[in-house]
Image (tube, rainbow, N blue to C red; front, side):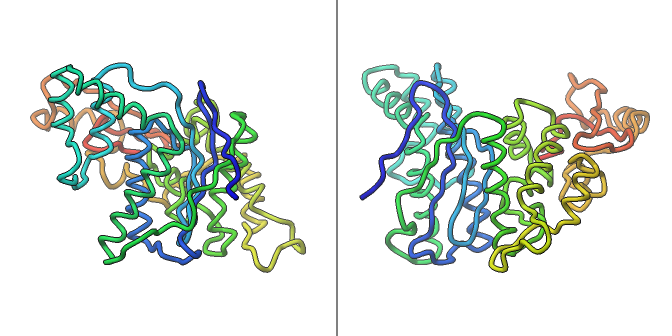
Amino acid sequence: MNKKRLIIHNRDGIYHLMSRCCLGEHLLEDEEKEVFIRMMHRQAAFCGVDLLAYSIMSNHFHILARVRHEKPRTDEELLERFRLLHEGCRISPYSMTPEALEKALERNDEETQRVRDALLARMGDVSVFMRELKQRFSIWYNHQNGNRGTLWMERFKSLVVEPSLLAMATVAAYIDLNAVRSKQVEDPADYRFCSYAAAMGGKASAIEGYRLIYGGLGFAEAMAGYRLCLFGKGAKPKGEQDKDRGVIPEEKLDEVIRIGGKVEMSELLRRRVRYFSDGMAIGSKLFLKGMYEQHRDCFPESRKARFAKMKGSDWGGLQVVRDLKVNLFG
């Protein structure tokens, strides 16, 4: 018999969500994990879900999510969410395209209201978020592998989490430590299919998840607090280690405590920091000003010579050109 699921109504709800592959089979390799993460972000954007933490393993996944109660109030917001869901995706000929939805909303007739109500009913609902995410991924996976039938063992498990710092940070740490417990890595930042590794690599959406957990603090402050929690819960004193479970080495915990959880430049440089790969220019403010003046034709006419200090650590005064083709730190 299935247990009755607790659902938060009329306000935002925080949930720890988990689902396992059918029969516990290890079906998700690196490509599958990457695709799942992309689909997860699109589905979350459509459903009004904030991804606070996640870890995608080879036979199951964990998500710490905040499901927002408030739904789009305008057709513009509704259309934007629908576009985010289908961005870069092949759309079935039996499904509505963003262009078709835009035309339907412009007509504003009885059929428009039916479509509008149907879309709104799919938002702000944890069950819809999980069902559609798993269905969309299953369709992709079966198409890629020539399979048929279900990919998942069960509907999904959910745990309501108190919206307090202690509860959210503790559950997030449990999620991020999955790869450590399974002895794949000693530092969760080395497992690239979890939110902590994504945040340490500069992914803006992952950073925002930890900032939400820590009440909107900046990246450095939020990650310092979280790292103390994460490494503290992931390490065990010598002599108390479970042979079947991996742990964070005690010396790593000592080092994190010594620096107060701060993310040092040497640590960030081991990750993929997009300042160094996707940017346009990096250096002192004087250098960037010179580059801007020499290459003025590369910028819109309305663009002013504004630059931004690099975030996430003490970068020694280095700055970057603001608002480039991609988010520099994510």
